[in-house]
Length: 489
Ligand SMILES: Cc1cc2nc3c(=O)[nH]c(=O)nc-3n(C[C@H](O)[C@H](O)[C@H](O)COP(=O)(O)OP(=O)(O)OC[C@H]3O[C@@H](n4cnc5c(N)ncnc54)[C@H](O)[C@@H]3O)c2cc1C
Image (cartoon, rainbow, N blue to C red; front, side):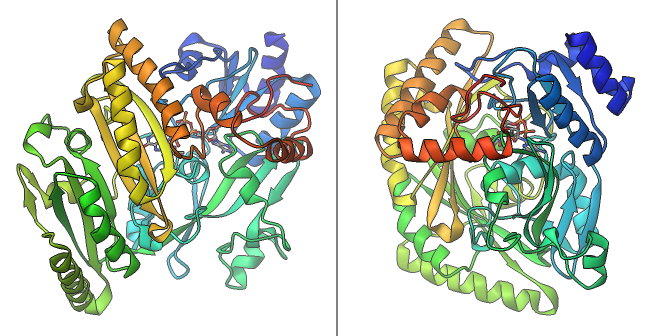
């Protein structure tokens, strides 16, 4: 069966772009603690949307599952690990063109394989910067990050939970292509560019926003072959300030006050272990338990004036809140932190640098609830025999501070069986307790899927399954992810 699918795929993309070699297959095995899955049968590297559509059509007529992938390894989340045997990985990393940078409209059009390292210099040339997650892995696809709703570091530019994703070109599980948002027409892309349009509006076509079905769907509804992404003007003046604190809750009132006024750009909180790992130092003992990181900027001819007023007003609010903006805390200089923003992580990825493994839990809540949820997790860590010092915490206010994303990164040694067993226990029991306490896992990885969907109402599950039946009736796309079954029909 493999040989015949291999040959059919080779006819579409060329022999050198299909592989069943172990070295290519094994990189998709699950590195998530407690995660399961199957090794894929083949990997195929398409080079165009037309080839993607042909492969999806072939999957429908020959009945084989596909998992779309746009980032390179390491894969800590397990969402791209096949859940069923015979899966073909649709590896889009070689579709990596920056199609268009539009400085006037602050928007960029990119293919799936474009990484932050590739995009940043292109945007810089145009005087732009991306809205990007904190220190992504070097091989992280910008498109996949937007599809996965990874939080970005600047909440004042985060208006909709879907930001910075705008329009998409999507090939659904039926093999049919749709351009979403204003990219849907009227007119071709070239005609739209000619008339001054920039595929900036994600809404549509008509009153329907199909990109919302694809975003967060973990490759189960459609394969996205390009997106447009919202960018911002690069600042001419930009400084980072640090506020250290012994407790997370003591930073809360100041955080809310500052977000409401939209004075600062970067705004997030990390604990000592997280900051230390990000800086690639073993210095958590010398750092405050929590550090709030703020970036303040100014733009254009009045950059210094803009910076001065933003900084002055931020300082006034800080004084009233009884906190102090610092440029150095312990051994950490604010300029060390500045270097971590607007850049991917060097190799090895910062989360696996010190111990080799990292179990991640990402959930959504509100800033005021996160200290309580963190305590719940620490209690589970104690019960599981995992030292609290090994838990890196990153709290990112999102959507103008209306809610916050919290990442709990448990660093562990994958070679140490008892460490793996303890961290697995913590991940399973900790996520369960977090859910019971109100944490919202909006994008559950494979290991949490059953826990999450057993809590979803039957009406919502029914609606999700009906949507899936319309856009991927044969369940060829990422079967077994989210609440969808594993059977190819
Ligand atoms: C809130 C939050 C925060 C996160 N923070 C981090 C983090 O700090 N570091 C980190 O490594 N990961 C983070 N992740 C997880 C990350 O987004 C990925 O899910 C994870 O890295 C696994 O992706 P991958 O590299 O294996 O594949 P990726 O190629 O990145 O794929 C990610 C998901 O998108 C689907 N997909 C990829 N390309 C396409 C496409 N072209 N069309 C349709 N679907 C596609 C895949 O099937 C998969 O389900 C976070 C996730 C969330 C929800």
